[in-house]
Each structure stands twice: as structure tokens, then as C-alpha cells.
Length: 115
Length: 114
Image 1 (spheres, each protein chain N blue to C red):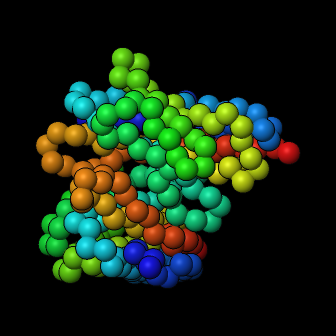
Image 2: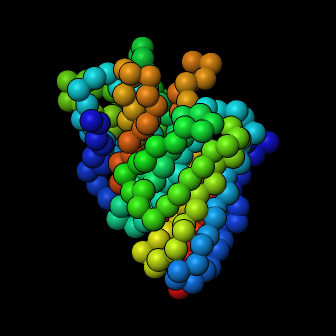
Image 3: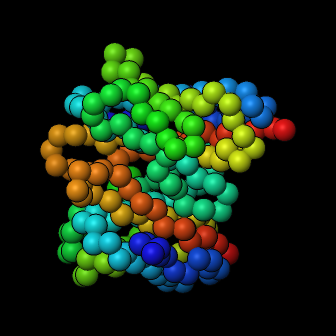
């Protein structure tokens, strides 16, 4: 069975500072990895995903995440955050094998960007 | 094109009443999901459906019933609402379609059980 651990429930940071949101997963088979973002009073939106190929994936708004198989991690980074990045971020994993498509979500990390 | 809609967006009910939350998609994704979101617990899967007439339990199914007679609809029913079911409920769709593998979430239904 797969599982996801988001190591920080809350990450406060000042505007224009770099940030890293940590995500570790556990699975006995190959996985797909996702980061979703949830702005206040909205549903989740896909931010970026790793399916195969390059282990470094990027979003259109400056976030990036790197799949590290040996450390079973998929940390999310941004070199310079904006106030508008304040949101809840969820890491998710789904297993490749078996034809099933049931992702598992972490508990979320609240990113709080201060001016 | 909203793709996935939920209704109602807000609902207040009383303990013991039956409540149905609706989820509708226009994109014909095979999988549909119901999650609840609570502070400190993140997203927890209640039920999911791989196709019409195929449903299965998730992590927290007790007290909930689902059906999927049509591909586009996936209603969630609380047969006898309890205060512990006060939560924000999200419907999602997804599946392996056209080489893409991701979920799309509805806007959520905020349910309060008094």
C-alpha cells in the first residue's frame, strides 16, 4: 500500500524568499507523483506532476519538484515566493501497476507568505 | 466549461436527516471520487467509482452511501447525518485518459450538521 508524508503542516515565509515543501512517499511499486494547490474556499488544482522521464518537473508559475527515487521524495520548491502563493499544498501518489487509479494524499502543508 | 460541478455549495442540516450531495461531470472520465476535508486530516477518501455501476469503499465510508447509475453523476448520501459529518466535501474525477493521469476537483460542498 502507498502512503504520503508531508513533513510540515505549516510553512511561514517572507515574500521573495525561497521555500521548500517536503513530501516523502512509501510504495512497493513504481509511482506517479503530484502536487496540488488549494486556494482559500476553492477546490484543489493540479500544480505539477511526475509520470516518467525527467525527474525535475516545473509548473507555469515558478514552482518545481524533483523526484528522488532513492530518497522516496518529491519536494516542492520555489526560489522566490509571492503573497499570492499563500495556499494549502497537497502531495499525492498513485501506483503505476495494476491498472488501479486510486491516489493517496498527504495531509497538506499550509504555505503562509508574509509581506 | 466547468467540467465538474457540485451542488449544493453550502448546506445546513440537522442530526438524523438524510442529505444528498450531487456531483456531475461533463468530461466522461471513468473514475469519480468523494473526499472529505477536515482540519488536521487533509483529504480522506470516502468512496470512489471506476465506472458506472462500479463503486468501492475508501478510507472513511461509514455513514455514507453512493451510487453511479450514469457515468456523469456520482451522488453521495448521508443516510442519517451526524455532527461528525460536518465537513467540506469534494468530488473529483480522473483516470488515465490520453496519456494524462491526474484528478480534477469540484469546488466543494460545505456541510454543517447541527
